[in-house]
Image 1 (cartoon, rainbow, N blue to C red):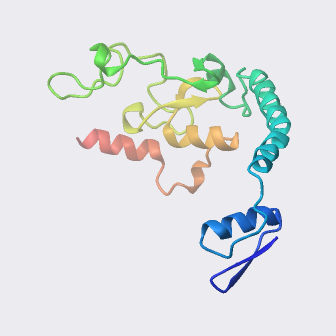
Image 2: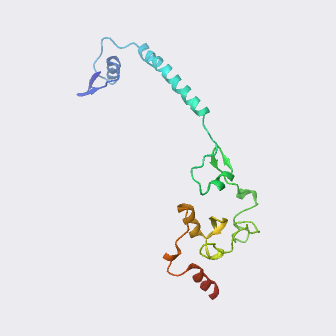
Image 3: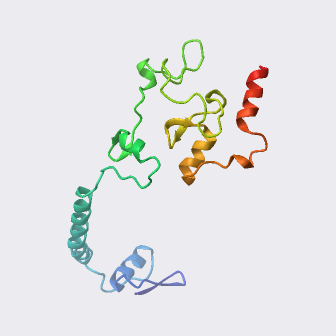
Amino acid sequence: ARGSFQGEVYVFESVSPEKVQAVLLLLGGREVTNPCPPSSHVNNKRSNLPHRVASLMRFREKRKERNFDKKIRYTVRKEVAQKMQRSRGQFISSKAKPEDGSGSATSWDGSQNWGSDKQPPGAAACHHCGISAKSTPMMRRGPDGPRTLCNACGLVWANKGMMRDLSKSPVPLAISTELIDGNS
């Protein structure tokens, strides 16, 4: 339908001419001899109703079929991921909340207490490069089990599935850490 208002011509493809004339009349345009009956608008809504009901039914059926089962798409960390707690398919923290008072990250004197008092089983040094566990941010899982590789070796193992090339390092890491630890 076409309509004009204040010299501008507007084209509305999906709107009936009666509706365009009614809007133009409301905006102060020319008077129309046969204004559209108000029931035509209600009839249009009723014709859309079955389509909307069908869409809502499809949505509700899909919502019922949602699957929150464990879905793991990687192999290196599959074992860890299967053991982690989940809520509606998402990983959730297994640590105690800070307001509980137990297991808080910082003690009363401000020193950090990130783990329990007992050390989890693991290596004192990286099984691959020999760096001390104290000299790396964290020990990571390797082919020999959890906490057997240093951060660098563990990341390469997790991402590439092979051990890190130590020949590219200018100074062997085990020797450099012994020098640093020995001088202090």
